[in-house]
Each structure stands twice: as structure tokens, then as C-alpha cells.
Amino acid sequence: LAKTTQPISMDSYEGQEVNITCSHNNIATNDYITWYQQFPSQGPRFIIQGYKTKVTNEVASLFIPADRKSSTLSLPRVSLSDTAVYYCLVGGHGSSNTGKLIFGQGTTLQVKP
Amino acid sequence: KAGVTQTPRYLIKTRGQQVTLSCSPISGHRSVSWYQQTPGQGLQFLFEYFSETQRNKGNFPGRFSGRQFSNSRSEMNVSTLELGDSALYLCASSLGQATPGGYTFGSGTRLTVV
Image (cartoon, rainbow over the protein chains, first blue to last red):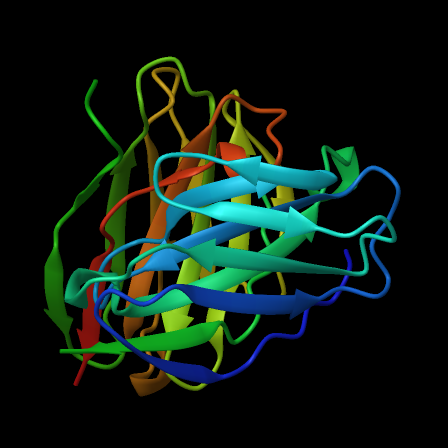
């Protein structure tokens, strides 16, 4: 499974757009790029997943360049409730790693009023 | 639809005791994975069960074990508890051949060993 690198922490203010970049230089051909959000004392919650180019849903956008060695999670107009830890993961359907997600340190996002 | 349910939500145990945690997956999900989360080590994979069989296992000692029942509900057991086992234990369910985005986590069981 490819290793990911992302900033340990980020600060933002309410109403701003936040971009969190993740590096995954050793991403495999069949790997997806997935982001989870976690609040204290709760389980991680799926935010968005993509394979290439851009993916957008009701809460975020995910930008993936052509070489797929990095990705950027974009959160539009954050609010205080977006304060959480954000994890970037890469992986595929690989039968040798069923059920196993590799979580790195994540990025702690602090949104200030 | 109902999410992943973990019970109990909080637990306090004494060193040397054993503990059993329960996880009920989303209806129709046949895979259940377990994770341990601590401030120092982050989220670490324990094991995964599918159709009552352990398919994958992380690097934890044999004191950590699990099982899955025919209704896909899963339990994990930790024997001879140590202070270092204090953690948030999370389970996640999926259909079985999921991409990383196909997992739904429960709220976890907070285990404190004293």
C-alpha cells in the first residue's frame, strides 16, 4: 500500500476555502485516493474518493493531477464544525489487503471564528 | 438505514482482566474490520472478518482475537489486559470487496485499563 504524506496541522477561518494536499509518490495503477474525516471520539467518516482528474460531491472536491502522485482535498467555505482530522488514504481492491485501511497521521484542521 | 453499532460505548477494566467488544455492521455488509486508535500510534488495523472467516490480520499479539457470527455481527476479545491497551476501538463494515471509500465506521468503544 502506498505511503501518504500530508501536513500535520492547518488553521483556517470560517468562510474560507481550505485545501489540504497529500503526497503519494508510490501510488499503484489500481489505487484509489480516498479522504476520511474524523471528529474526536468518533469513527472516521468517508468524505470523497477519486481515481484521476477532479471529483466533486456535496461536501468537498478532490483534485488529482495526471501523474497521480499527489492530490488536494478542497473544502469550500469551512465552518467551525469542519474542525477535525482529515486522512488521505490510497489503496485498491487488492485481495491481499482486504478490510485493511492504512491511516497516516492525518491533518488536524482548526477552523477559527 | 442503521449505521454500524458498537457496544459498549465506554468500558473500564483492570489490568489482567479480559474484555469483549461487539460490532453490528450495516445490514447486508459481510465484512467487519477492527482498528485500535491511540494518541501515540494512531489508527492501526487489527483484523478483518468476512463470512465468519478471518481474512486479514494486523501486527498485534495473540491476546487480541475476534470472531464473526452468521449474521455478520462481530466481537473482538482482548485477554490479559495491559495499561497500553487503553484505546478507542473502532470497527468498520463493508460489502467485502470494497475500495477504500466503501467502509463505514462505528463510533467506537473507549476502553480504559486501570
